[in-house]
Length: 164
Image (cartoon, rainbow, N blue to C red):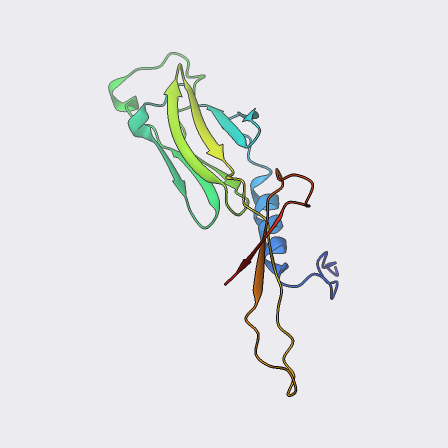
């Protein structure tokens, strides 16, 4: 089967890593345990909540690995000390991964009533325009000019000219 490259356009330079990210997401899409919610808690904030009933704080780990939030759970196996007449609650380990966009920061994790909350934030980048000098044998050298764009500025288009 031939695979279609979504980012094969000559106008999309440096986006080949996005295809690898999409492959990672496709691999983790089939995971069903533990169930989770993702909610927006502010304009630039998210919260992932995983239902991890039966897991203690020490049974869980949260880490960021290569722009991927990874939550792992492994319960201590105490079945040798117990005699079950019925075992409907599985003590199983899990790994749940979420691919993070560039710049997303994990602000913290908290366990409340069997729910693990992981708070994320995307800092707002300040847009910037950089003019690149076109060199020519007849032109004098001129330093590149950087224009910081302030989206909240007034009628002058939000531009401030700063020479560097």
